[in-house]
Image 1 (spheres, one colour):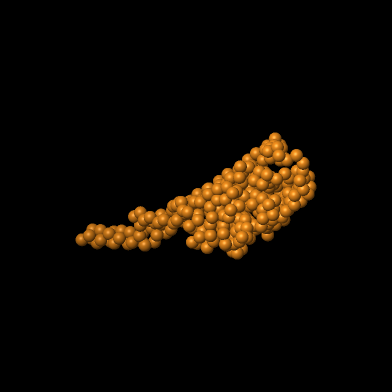
Image 2 (cartoon, rainbow, N blue to C red):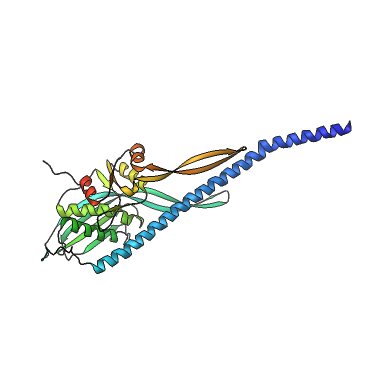
Length: 310
């Protein structure tokens, strides 16, 4: 009889221990596991962002090297043989350009130290003046941003010369870039397509449509290439009053991460699943600015210059 009482007491203690385990220990561990999964996913995303930033920085350095090599071996003017004397050309054009400021922020939570990339969209004003000079391509930035825009300016002028067929041997092309905050070097090449638009508009004395803006790199063949910070730049464009946002075709899709939860025996695992979505659809629906996809500088000019009055 005494043995039965002992066995009953042991069973009761076992039941109580299981209840305690289910009620307190498992949820606590579940919370810890979920937090660890969240942190792992967050670190993975931050690593992807940092790797992308590194790739873009490497691309910028490659652009510097290729542009330096290109302009060391190329004549100042297009090789069409039709220009025999310098022609004095003057002109001016300007347009606001979207940009992204970037900052690495360090967070400490429950002993875990993480670093995350914070991106904020902003607008900068890019203007170009063509005036009699010595065939120079000059860039001035406010605040001082080093040489991050020089390679884009060189390529922009090269494309503008080829597009218009004009000699600039007797003219200086001066780009002025004004921003509230210092712009990342990554956004130097990203302004290339817009710099080409204002350069051609200045040479042709055709006004730029102030309701539009664009982002995209430019190569010497006039192809508009991919950039980073698509949604941040679209948001900045919308908030500045722009109604049309020109976007490179290479950025026509982007990856969005959605939160997914899965239960395994009382444990809830949280993960972020990547999904490719249309940039145009997302921006027009969630940000509220019209998007035009462009491939070449011809597409940019068709959308970005004011139409001639009939």
